[in-house]
Length: 167
Image (tube, rainbow, N blue to C red; front, top):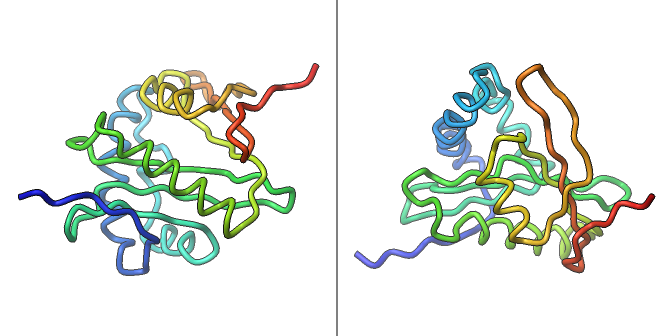
């Protein structure tokens, strides 16, 4: 077999595979928080397609199959908002999430002049929190988004240093 996973920019033709993978990957999150109406599970194909053009979207492929993806955008101040980092359940815990995160950070800095990176995850999402911290992100905020879920905001600067909140 010996196929390796490659990472590249997503195209319009990837949209349907990304959406299906997103639906699969967010089932655990929905179960964890008891909420199956979360945006990644209700997003439409048209909604995802609308994110492809203005944003920075990468896919990880194993042959022709999309097995991972990540999306981001950069605001006027240079803060990159990285969202929907997903890896097929059968390929988790093999470094693919870290590869996707590193690839999007590199692209955001080189092509969109990102100065800092910002991620968001639920407070019970241990895998996401572990990955973020492993790659230098530090918690900078918590927001209650429902009675069941707090949203954790993590940041680091583009030089790879964890963000340090000022007093």
